[in-house]
Length: 636
Image (cartoon, rainbow, N blue to C red):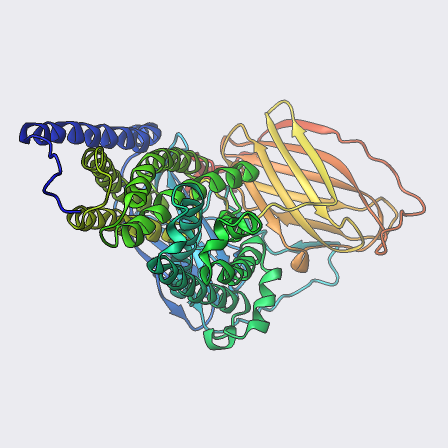
């Protein structure tokens, strides 16, 4: 049917639509601006502005072997009350590396960090964080580099010593950011994730739209061709994604990772890898509905026909399982993915299939019904996206790479919302009294939905980029469980710490020291383990490179040696920059190498010792503590 009998709105009515659209756009901009700026306001109000000018290693560098030291030069001098922390992760998934305390040079702009244990061969990521005296972020970013060959480390043990001193414990930063796919195949992972995600969302959205608002759709030849095309793209993209993940995890070439047998290795890489393999299986199953879309509406097959693309889309919620409240994060992601799939997948279906040309009343009805559903889906997508952002980012929006990419993505979302709001208003006005879809209207609306879908692809590309960055609230250091934890506390000074061992048996033991509270910056922290009197065992002394609140860990492979079973005394000695010193003791049971209980042992109660007084040492400021307070080194 032509446009001759179509009643068009008066010119004045068309003009009155523009202020309404502009008002909605301004409102959307204001809401997003408040959401982005408000959480970060306290940090920006309290923090200065400084950024990294140069580093060694530099971003993207390839080193022959592990460096002995790392250097970081800032653009402006670092104040004495500002803190600088560094965390290094190597491999996929990232494993924390052993580094020393950052030392600030006399020029007040350059930090030097000693590499206590050589970095392994492969991809590594440095996460640095500069904070002010209120513990608010000033600047943070990551530096990705790679090591071409392993470095052989050598150690010396003093056989005639009564105590063994172990090399320094690796420091675990409380705040970190790392590249989740930091290997050489990171680009392929991003591209495969993008192609797979876009196509899977279109499959899911199309199936839902056909089931809910357009049951006549599968009868059109263009629908059948569309479903086959999208399924093919989804399969190719998912294969690329799985192969790239496999190459990163196994450190093999991308060509070798194309073998389906190698994909089984992803089951050992964690839930993101398992979810990728499951997505590939579900996408393969979607061929069943792609070749015969009418199964979506047949009562006997409808449930399975909708479940297959729904399950494939749901696997995207397992791409990131970190941060606080992981279960809540998965639920939010599922809601977000469902709403984005209905909005984005429906927009592509309507733009490429429903509006492919003029047609009967079912095309008009499907377009009108989609505009109503899409508005709700878009609102839910924005709300769930903001909730997930707050869970992962908090207030550090403008002080991290993740946050800056998020801002750019938000601008694309605003543009997409503007196009969507304008499109819904125009389409509803044009189709209010129409019974059929004219060629002119189909062409005009197809361009509108095409623009909306194109911006949606850009938004999804930024979402994939964000998955390659760790948010500020996600720690690089994984949670670990220890066989025994000994709390130590000095009530008089307010020092509280926990000393953990694993497996708490004769032989090497992994160590974790957690400083929970400290009344002042720490200049020296030592943990000593002594066996029972008369056991002929040798004690162990461990320097802890912490200057404030934080976690220090020593892996089991290079851990503390315990040569006899029984009750060992744990002595924690801490010196403050004020010149005061405190000693606290506790007791820990060391079992036989096979885990059995020693035949006899003495139980030593924890006896905290208060501050004993000044050390008479000269205090010389040298570094900055991890908790934001100045650290000073005691020189006799």
